[in-house]
Amino acid sequence: MGKWVNGTFDGPYNTFFKTGLPQMSRIYQHGVLVEEKEYFKEGQLSHQYNFSKDGGEKGINFFQNSQKQKEFEIVGVFPNQIETGTYFFDNGHKRQEYKAHINSDYGYGYYQYFGEQKTYSEAGVQTSSEIYNDKGLLDGKSFYIYFHKKQSYRFESLWKDGILVEETKYNEKTSEPLEKSEYFPDGSIKQKTKY
Image (cartoon, rainbow, N blue to C red; front, side):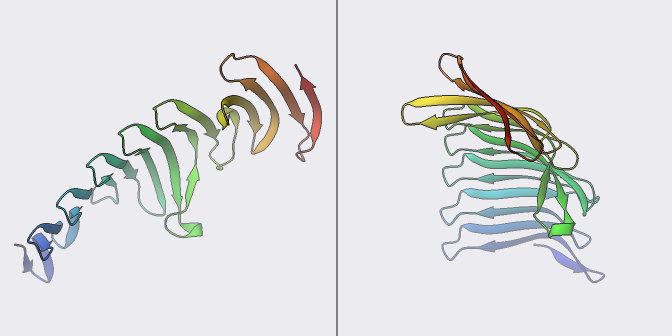
């Protein structure tokens, strides 16, 4: 067990459920939290976070079946932190990969994406890719797959500073183009072509 040294807590601090299983485990160094683990009532690890002196953080959240739910890393000092991470389905496949600024102007937890963001289906197939610029606006080529009944469509888009320039719809199975739309900067359709 930890102890108080010169007014700061140092060492481990643990709590337990009534069953005797661990509920939470924390480790402090000179009053600063450096590691935290929390557990589900059945004893499985719920999350594990490691904290660095410079404000960084690495962590993993788990589902109750012990599969990863989220894995992330935060670097930098708040309010100028960057978080990169991956969300998972409870079957272990990736759900989303992201990179974001944590922006204090909107309160803790507001994320402004930048770079490439990806999503996946529960079967592990990539279903989207979006590229954001440093202002948090879509910029460049992106795609997403839309499932409707037994049919799936692939939409490929071109963005410039958050403004949709063009979008082409494809039959996902055959890769055959179905239609293409071009847009004015105000979002209205400039031209639509059906194939």
